[in-house]
Image (cartoon, rainbow, N blue to C red; front, side, top):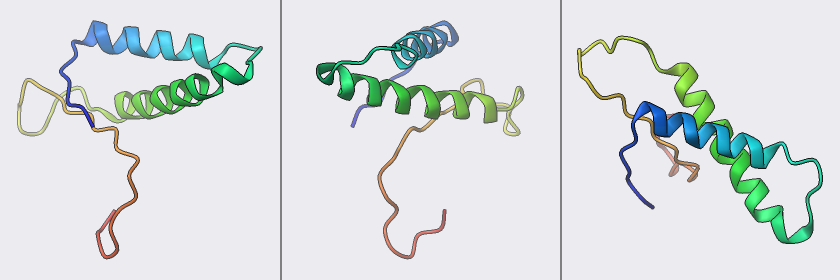
Length: 78
């Protein structure tokens, strides 16, 4: 698990790079894990950015995007 802080330009670079890897039409077995990871990172980041509002209700300057695919513990709300 890592925590990182990215500027808007860096988030855009992540999306562009992950999409390029995801869209590679020929995938050999050695690149399958890289392709799968790129697909997951692209999908989750794109969804998080799409869901982010332009103005936060608490007027904070920082928007937090959490990419966490771990299953929720039993009894936790989604």
